[in-house]
Each structure stands twice: as C-alpha cells, then as structure tokens.
Length: 318
Image (cartoon, rainbow, N blue to C red; front, side):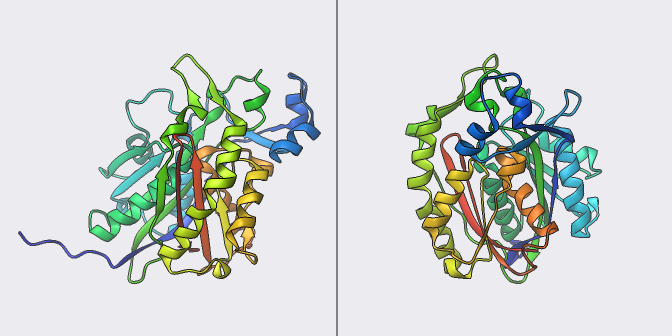
C-alpha cells in the first residue's frame, strides 16, 4: 500500500459570521419577566442579543456564515471536500446539518458530519479539520458553529432567557507549508454533566449557573495555558484571547489568570449574548472586521460548556 503524502500544516484562510436581524434588548425582556437591565448586565454582562425568527433555522444561519467565510477565503465551493458543523440545537438529529449546509452552498459530495460538544463545539470541529488536513484526509474544510438556542429556552425562566441567543460563525481551513493551527488541549468533566442539560425533547435548557461559574473560573485557565505550551507560544505573545462568550464575568476572570496582559480579549457577549458553538468564530470574525487584530497575529481560542467539555488552541489570524 502506498500512502498519500500528508500536509505539513493547516491554517485558517478566513472567517465569517452571521447574526439574525431581530435585536432583543434587556429592556425588551424586562417587559415580560421580573428582571432589569441593571440586573442582567451586573450578572452576565449582556445588553442585547439577536434572536432568529420562526422562519429562520440553524441551517439558514449556518449557510449565511459559511457563505461569508467561503467568499472571504477566495476558494470556490468545489474546492471544499469536507464540511463540519458544530451545533447542539438541531430540532431533529437526522439528517445532520453538515450535509444540508453543504448542498445549499453548492459544495458537491463533500465529507459531511456534525459535532456536538455544545459551547466547545467550534474548537473541537476546528481541531478535527486541522487533523484531517494534516493527515491527508481533506484538502480544504469548511467549519461552522451554528445555534438557534431560542427554540430551546423557556422565555419565562430568568436564569436562562437573558443569556442565550442565536447566530453562526464559520472558518475555512486549508493545507499550509507551516502550521497556523496549534495542537488542541481538550477534555471533559463528565461528573458535572448535569450542570447544563436538556432532559428530553419536550424540555427546555436548564443550567446550574453557580456550578458552571465556579468550574469555568477555576478549571479552565490551565487548559488555556496548556494550549499555548503545545503551540510553543508564551501567553505574552498573544494578540488576542477569544474564549467562548458565556458570561462577561467568566471571560474576565479567565483572562486575568492566563497572563496574556497585552492581548485583546473578545467581549462579543455584550451585544451578541451566548451563542454556544457559534460564539468563538462569530466574535473573532467581528474582531477582524473591526481591525482589532491583524493577519499573522496569534489568537488563543477557548471553548467550554455542556458536557462538560472544553478545548483550546492557538491559531494565526488569517
């Protein structure tokens, strides 16, 4: 058997993000439940979020974000041979999201599968894409995180309805002479899996907020530092830290402990809410659009959420 040559590295060529048009402010929510703008901002840091209409599915969101990333990459649809979609909010598990998204984007007969690692899903999918390229299993990969959390939220539950939102973010990963995606540092804490749960198809998302907060602010900064070590990068070299946009207090607590004092910290949570697997690529695409990071800069990504799962890697900004 003659093995095909493998790629020495993989890198991100481009990002793309998409949010629904409907903006829901804290004041809007306060009209229907017992809460206030001050209460929400002081606990989670959110001022507004985007909610998809009943006619807009998580597949629609993914197509929009994936199309933007593909256009920005300069590649044609027929150059993509693998599509990976990270999501935990499909209305039904069959068929998967990846095959449907690929078809609507005009990508013909790619490998296509979904990843459910909840809010860590994009980092898991990015690692799988990088490994597939380096192993020679794929040449160009479209990676998408997409969520329509609004359909899984009890809008009378103040503990969750103020936090979660809808959106999608995407990246195109391709072979490279030098690596632009560092080794992933990942893991899980299954003993805490009940902290974030949807009990069955007739239930809403339930979250034990204090349990998640304590875990995230104590257990995750070593994971972030391990990703830096595996990439051969000192935190002082980072231009950006892009964690999952779970809660502003969690983001700021982890950022302080990493030691990346000069890095810009993504705080997309303020205007986008928690969009689970979409939050990291969505936040990073907006940072690039605003010119807050430059091509070649190093960014540390850190995803974490239900499962409880977590993953981190260092990438070069395209």
